[in-house]
Length: 245
Image (cartoon, rainbow, N blue to C red; front, side, top):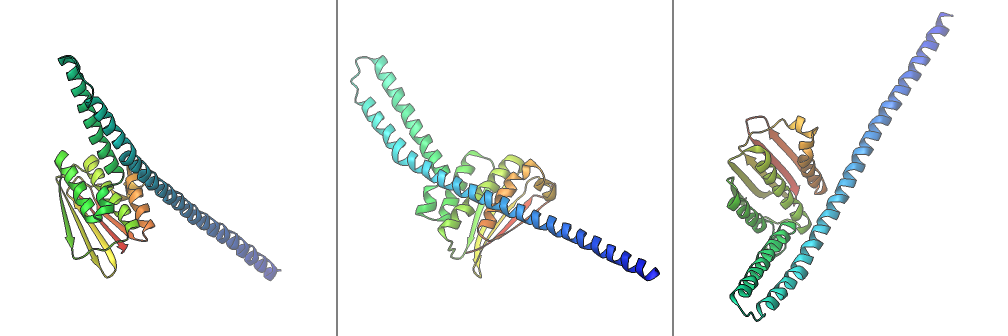
């Protein structure tokens, strides 16, 4: 009788353990599948976003700009009869010039021409120049050796640099930011250091302020790379990204 109770207890315990293991494995599998699907969805959204940016930038450059230039020529060809009309024509021409410059700037932000024409380094230099001309943040770009990167990866690296710089301007209250690009053993190394306020990395990942961080992680994943962020309140922030070249 005692042996039967012992065997029954052991069988029930084993069955409970199997059920628990099954549920644990199911939860882990579901969680991993959910994360994978989330990353695939975000990856697809980023790809669509970049394609749409490229299309809009091309339309602005190829259509809107020439059209406005034509309108300016037409306005300037109008024969005016008095000073008042002449001032209206001159102001209109100036407004068109301002609009053309703004459209070029928007087009450049959507898809920097230098990225396709001159590559990642020159596009980054132009971006840094634009930021430092309008902001007090001092940005230093350092490169080491010859850097060769696939064009489809260059856009993601450029967006990562943009995201980190913009986050620094918005939240870090930093005075200096250093960007280092080098290539070693088939890996592109992107190291960024800023001397701002710093933050709790684990806490940031669970709040809305971590959306920018999530974008960095997704873009790094798309390139099969790795991302390490080191920061703490009052200590600034370090970003180290390794990407197969």
